[in-house]
Image 1 (cartoon, one colour):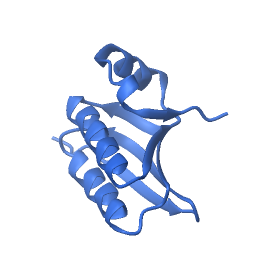
Image 2 (tube, one colour; image 1 turned 180 degrees about the horizontal axis):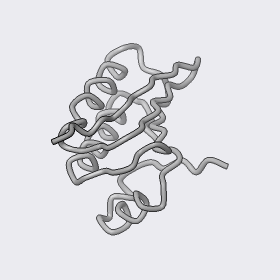
Image 3 (cartoon, one colour; image 1 turned 90 degrees about the horizontal axis):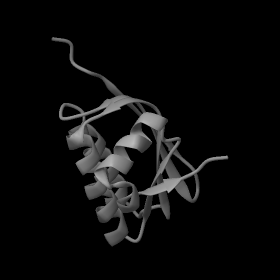
Image 4 (cartoon, rainbow, N blue to C red; image 1 turned 135 degrees about the vertical axis):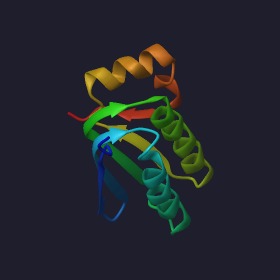
Length: 109
């Protein structure tokens, strides 16, 4: 069985960190994502961490749960964790699960 890949690219700007995600967010890849976000929250945190979801092809319940947990952790660290470029499929999943309100979704023009 092939291991689903999630490529994670971290780009730092003065006031925010953008984490570009491409691939699948699932039980096999959430740990890596959590580790990166947690490390960013431990450092003197930026005021914003943006997860660029434009390359995400799949997100399972484990992935959704992790996004919510990371969002809460960021709040405790006085940081905003925002999702950007959320695709239609993921937006539908967030609507169905009722998690849309639990996550900060920035609409990019």
